[in-house]
Image 1 (cartoon, helix red, strand yellow):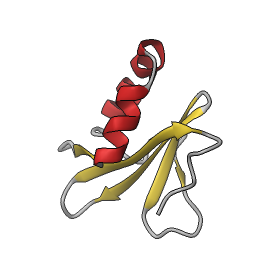
Image 2 (cartoon, helix red, strand yellow):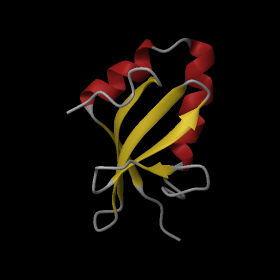
Image 3 (cartoon, rainbow, N blue to C red):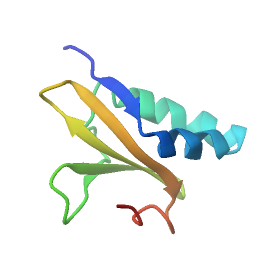
Image 4 (cartoon, helix red, strand yellow):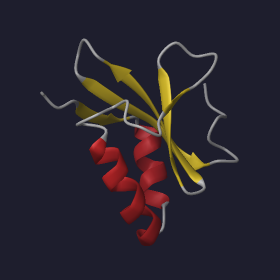
Length: 88
């Protein structure tokens, strides 16, 4: 099965860089696993959006879009759950 390419919105890249080393070490492997299976067990589709998904890592959420035609997972946000759904 071909792997998806992981792309980051500039804001999501900055959010990831601001995380503590310990937290980043937990979040980054989960993001990498999206290349193999973007709709893995535990991910949820966000209500009210056509193609947005989220994965949960403790108190943090990774919000992403799956572009199947292009084989791309576009990471939109990496935020604490209290701020995760405030975008666009």
